[in-house]
Amino acid sequence: MTTAHASIRSAFHELTLTLLGLFEVYGADPALVEHAADEIESILRRHLGAPAGPPGAKGKLALERLLDELEAAQASAPNPQTAH
Image 1 (cartoon, rainbow, N blue to C red):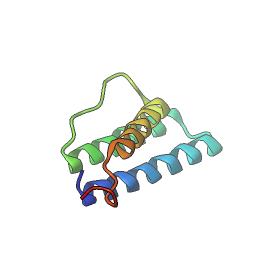
Image 2 (image 1 turned 135 degrees about the vertical axis):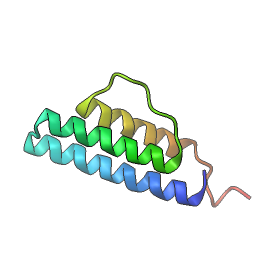
Image 3 (image 1 turned 60 degrees about the horizontal axis):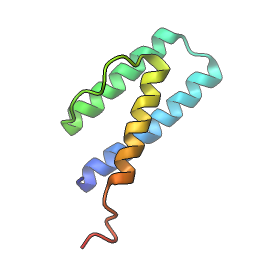
Image 4 (image 1 turned 180 degrees about the vertical axis):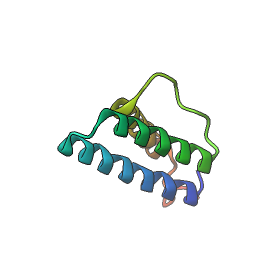
């Protein structure tokens, strides 16, 4: 994973965490949550050239699935300090 991709994934990770928290605290309308999840995922995948995620997750579940995917990508990325 390039440094730019890692930075983008990190930014989307923070954005997704923040939105999940805000939507939970303020009891956001499920349609808003679903639309936000769809758009965030679409933008991230288009920017990184990543394939579409598995179908079926909607709304908060889609945000949580995206968060899980971002965290898995972070965990599997080589550490730039140890990769020589």
